[in-house]
Image (cartoon, rainbow, N blue to C red; front, top):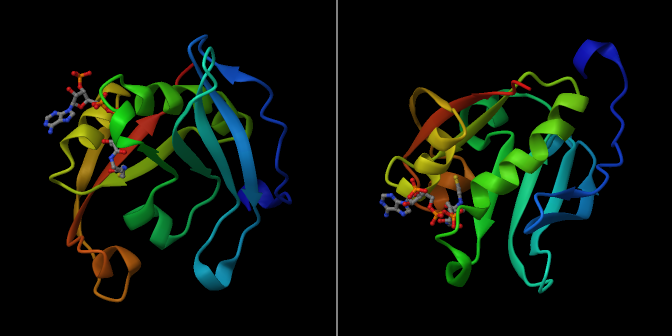
Length: 157
Ligand SMILES: CC(C)(COP(=O)(O)OP(=O)(O)OC[C@H]1O[C@@H](n2cnc3c(N)ncnc32)[C@H](O)[C@@H]1OP(=O)(O)O)[C@@H](O)C(=O)NCCC(=O)NCCS
């Protein structure tokens, strides 16, 4: 736990840019046996229509699995709602919450051929730290992923 303090989930408050809002669906406590750190799970929802367009997770913590392979932020937009930059807008809506937890940067990963995700991370100012091999004993490997690009997004005001 950062700074030796006990972790506490915070009330994220309303998270919206006017068109896209994040609705908290779940908080999951750490589970070291599964390399899980405390996690917020949000739905991405269009403000006007209330249509759900995707999901985003913020993982508040670090371990070698998160740092190298999984990342602290993860997102998915439903196929029929892609092409509006919702993933990067959703990420921006979470930066304040991440800062409130004392984070100064977020680590994010994606497969080298996931161009939409790479572009998303680059638009957010993500710096490519490198490309790592996915170890065979991981869920990513079993899902067909062999390499991960690691990005660092600085959380400047
Ligand atoms: C990654 C994902 C969330 C992005 O969804 P989105 O926010 O709708 O992203 P967009 O479609 O608006 O694309 C974002 C950027 O990538 C670009 N892009 C999209 N597909 C691309 C492709 N095949 N090749 C090159 N660039 C591409 C877009 O042009 C856009 O850049 P721009 O704004 O400069 O034009 C979505 O593709 C998805 O859910 N994928 C499956 C799950 C996943 O991969 N999650 C991330 C795991 S790391």
